[in-house]
Image (cartoon, rainbow, N blue to C red):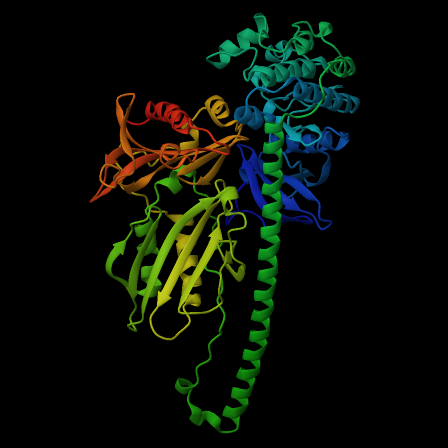
Length: 627
């Protein structure tokens, strides 16, 4: 999810919008909060599509179709408006990832997970077909996973069994090639058996990580669907018979949803999601909870600001009335030039959201960000930048009144690494994000925000001034300017092609290797440049950054690994501590600095092989670095 943009609605019907879930060719999906406290997923059609009568009629049909479907394994319709300039549909929000996302992040599913998936999808089909509908677009992206089972969503191209208006061009095929039935691929009339075929393809993908009709291009995929036997060799035996029956070319040979449910129930495996899947589901649930909590805090703050604004407007009207009376009574001698009235409150300059990608965070230029953001309000920079720490930069600024202040911007951690590390809310807001801060006033002041996209990154601005005075207002004003710059035009470092700064550290280690070495099935992004894996016995981190040159700073013993020189510090050999750190210099940059790869490996128990494990990770990473 990411924050609402300046063009996103803040209210649709009775529902207050909280965040953007996603966007596609037909519209945006927003997370909404109803007056009853219920979360809803709101699909809002793009305005240019809403002007197309054919598309609008199709959307009305979707709303009508979705409203007929109920059941534990579908997302029910909550509200809609099909006649507005931007029509929308609100359904129950499922706080879980799509099956597509889960398989991409955790790999093929266990037999118990497959049983739960098959039983849930069969139950959903029973309800869909009972309403007289054929879904027509069942695919992993349209199946969300909650803690107790799957949920089928998106009836965007559902058709009533008894027929209806043809809302697509003659000869066109709607659906997802790898998961559509042969009869749908040929454009023949569909029966509920078409959805059963899709379920078979989905189960095979969940069991193996790939479509049973995989091909290098869409025509080849469609040919395989029509003429080739499905590849089910890697589907677990107890599930293979179910999948192959669902994937029969002849619709009459496929099981009914009721028969599919009975067959899934006979599998001897506990119907539960694997631990890695439950972790991904929990992460999505905490993500939506965070958005709701943050938006509620912001709404309360806005209400307080609006109340203060109205009170001061009333006070100003009273002052203006008193001044008019004074003029009428001969008080004009005061002179307008001697009577200055200021509002005393600030209004937000923008509502732009910060939604940088991981690569944009990693290649951000903190010094340019600092100067470009603060020069307008705090004067010119005096002296050089100080940027000895990666992701941070500081400088002094002097304004026209000769006021001198020192500012430092720091791009910090992400995700769970921020939990419990933040100070209390300061009461201020920047770019729809609440500010955190330790103190309300002082000659030095720190202010943070946590961006609301993925990855969630902390942005801190520290301010100092000599002598007496409160610098916290300057820190808050400066942080707002920094956030505005990040939202509109974030400056990037001028990096050469062989730089590693743009690489995603989490993508450099295969899930299988990480699991083998640490027991961790999932990684954790702890900063834009660092990734962390932690299992029951071991843990390790991988960082791509700029730091001191290892060949000049004595960061371990030089060691040859696959023809490259890495500097290895084995704490077990020195201190009998099960920790090891490997540092590799990719290229020198400036003075005594270099782009480096750091791998820190450790164990929760007494283990002398941490460096051997670290070297295995290094070998994998080295092969993927720019030459």
